[in-house]
Length: 253
Image (tube, rainbow, N blue to C red):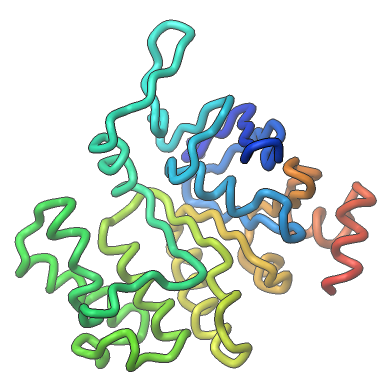
């Protein structure tokens, strides 16, 4: 398989706090990579760096062969203008833990907003696509509802449909179930399972160990801003090599 995401020697600090300490990672096309780790390990920062919501201090990130946020000239990188970064982000869907839906727009309007405004698609075409996506996530009957009228699980499924509306090459999930009541977690994970079964390239930051074991092609365990170990779920979750991984799993399993 080709490499969809190529992360090389990525460092990121916030003031004196070094959050990412030299991250190297490859994600292959059509595979699901699940990132685990304790709070403060750098998982969300890494995810946000992939679509340039956070600017890295050192290193480079490429998606589908294109540098994200920069252009290379010789040995130097130059930051792209904001409009070009925004264009790159249309190829990378991002599902946040707190939904981030527009409260004043209906479900359907939330899903068509980016295709119409960012990609300049005809509204009729965007609406037809949005209705298919809402059916795909089990919310065809909620097209005219507002976010406040939905449960947390339903809002997150709308957020997934919204991300898919741009037909991205890559989907990023930042703890998509952490803001949900326990009984709503399953309905969101079912949608992600369906996407995985269809070969969608995804990076999922989550604490759902059973989900990682079931769906992931690769499990990455992060701690203290570094990748401690990575590999198939049977190895990382079933027979971890590193003591730091074993200690983490002992607390969460």
